Length: 143
Image (tube, rainbow, N blue to C red; front, side):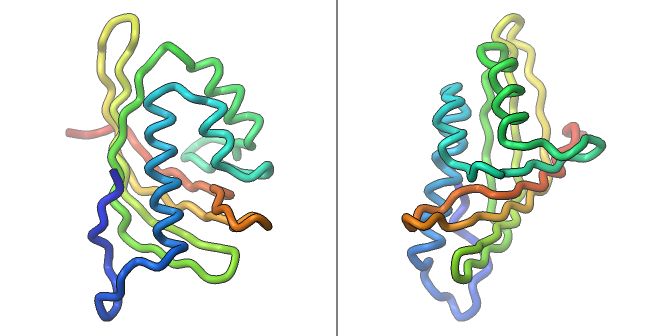
């Protein structure tokens, strides 16, 4: 679940855009845990790009291919705490800290990783928020 304790000036309640994006982030983690690749792809723009340390940019189709190759090999659980959020017009961003536990379906071995993520969302013409860019700085968990 996304942590609702994010800095808000003046203690303002979440607006509709923030609620929708938090719901998308929750849905992303749920679908990832369930191995629902098509469901995850439905949460991103057609031109989504993922940036990770030491790797070339990954397009939506690259992400889909990698996810399909990964399917059934690991269970992926994650928790995420939003540190900062802002939406304006049809663009929004969320800076968050994420912790991921990957459990091998074959051996049960667990790998833990954690790091910061900066995600950019775009509102579609139908009013639906979708992930457009994701700069994922997850590194091997040192603890």
